Amino acid sequence: MTQGYTENQKVLDFVNASAELAQPDKIVWIDGSDAQIDALREEACSTGEMIRLNQEKLPGCYYHRTAENDVARVEARTFICCRDEKDAGPTNYWMDPKEAYPMLREIARGKMKGRTMYVIPYSMGVVGSPFSRIGIEVTDSIYVVLNMCIMTRVGFNCLEALGKDGDFVKGFHAKCDIDPEKRYIMHFPEDDTIISVNSGYGGNVLLGKKCFALRIASYLGRKEGWMAEHMLILGVTYPDGTKKYVAAAFPSACGKTNLAMLIPPKHYRDLGYKVETVGDDIAWIRVGEDGRLWAVNPENGFFGVAPGTNDHSNPNALAATRKGTIFTNVAIDPSDNTVWWEGLTKQPPEHLIDWLGHDWTPASGVKAAHPNSRFTAPAVNCPCISPEFNSKTGVPLDAIIFGGRRATTTPLVYQSRDWNHGVFVGSIMSSETTAAATGAVGVLRHDPMAMKPFCGYHMGDYFAHWIEMGKKVKNPPKIFNVNWFRQGENGEFLWPGFGDNMRVLDWILKRCDDKIEAQETAIGYVPYAKDIDIEGLDYSVETLEKILYVDKERWSKEADEIAEFYKQFGDKLPQELKDNLATLKANCEK
Ligand code: GTP
Ligand code: SPV
Ligand code: MN
Image 1 (cartoon, protein in one colour):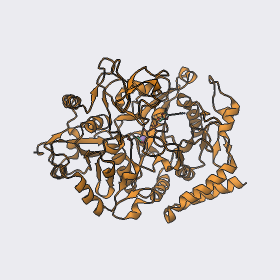
Image 2: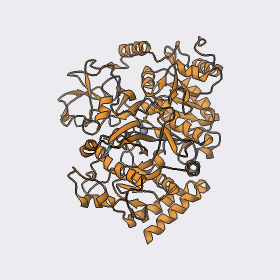
Image 3: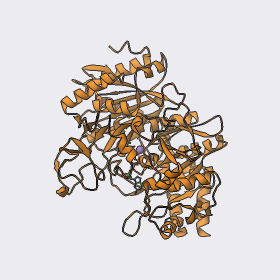
Image 4: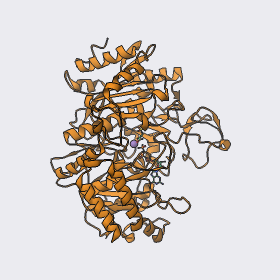
């Protein structure tokens, strides 16, 4: 029954084996056509899996609620299943494939009885680009199919690109019983395989995203000499028409989508500055023939955090969600069948249906939208999408930025001294946890390069890979660290953030061109307060100085803490990072 669409025996074997295991009543191959997508939306609405929103105000937009126990990535149930535990490293959960495969088979056996199994051929990256990779996801969820059709490039041209013999990443997803006790998000990097059971949520089930484009791809990248990173990519156009590109790694729900789509403050706009989005979450990066690093965004849409998105904070993201978008776990405004979430408007509507399906009023005392509620919006909808979005070669990077959510210690921005120091700066990232993963929110934890939950192999080897990549690039991007989240005594943010982050980007790009001096501090180069443009802001130089200040005492403690964190990597920790830690400690004692 699966013949006819492809002659690739590996694809047919994978689909047949999946069907034999899960025993669906029907197999449907997804060609990604409008007609097929419309029919699936219709079917999902008829069963209640999705709700059709107001088609005049939000054409092509739909709504989905996940199970209450299934609202975010589950790191404790996300495993790297390589043969040798040592290869997964101390920051990953590991299971022996010999144990994992039979366990998963047991869980998934017969679980698609009475259901349809959809076969999604998709490409991460533009089909036909040497940067791109093909995946096949089988799933019993229409919600997953429709999300994948937005987030990736779905279609039979992916099967054509595979030809008779091409290899692909195998993804098996079955909702099973959405049983959190049997929920597993399993990666077999040695077999190009992902298996996800008992979830229906975002990063757990849209297997092209974190599972493939980061965990599997990071493993492939190390083997093949490229990098898969949790980074946005943006382009800045200058008044004279020159363009510069920046990639930035922030942990989940720490501002990637917002930075990628920022609208510069008025005086920058008046001068002709423009920011365009190449990607908002993932970058695949290679060394170009010109000795620079080139980045592509392997995705085709945005799976963005809804709360906090509004006409002021991120008008581009909001505009992207006005058509062809799937909303997950936000609130519904029954007065006109549209959507609402905390922060969309200052004044909440009088009556909503909350993410759990209950009546809600401003007096309810609970959030109407889940803090990790999301929109899945096509990238082409975004008013500031870069003309390079579909480029087969990607864009050359001038700067790489790391950043996290730190109430204290880390200044607004600083620059590393060189590539290896930049790798060190990425490796020591800490950030307060957010609602993007289950578990406590606001807990400070180490999240090197924002990849702690996404690195498909040993983090010590990952650091070494970064160091190696530095040796291959003649003209490496300069590496910076930012922190939009410094807090004052009353927990208020001390930096306006959002569009005003352009002011920091401006300093960063001037540093890349050696156009501006900086102060050398214990941790790297920090701006002179006078060099951060605060024109048009009601903002004091004193506050700026405060958030630029490098407190050596705090950093000395931080260095001790980093030494503790580093211990787990043992002899896999590159000497270059040990040296940089020693320098940091010594600088703080000076
Ligand atoms: P993932 O999709 O989970 O990877 O998240 P992300 O890194 O793309 O984060 P996103 O841009 O969606 O922002 C997450 C939250 O941080 C939202 O609630 C934003 O409103 C908030 N945020 C983003 N940028 C800033 C900023 O510059 N300052 C402040 N204070 N908050 C910000
Ligand atoms: C993240 O958590 O970093 C996300 C959302 O981008 S998810 O796809 O759920 O991983
Ligand atoms: Mn992310």
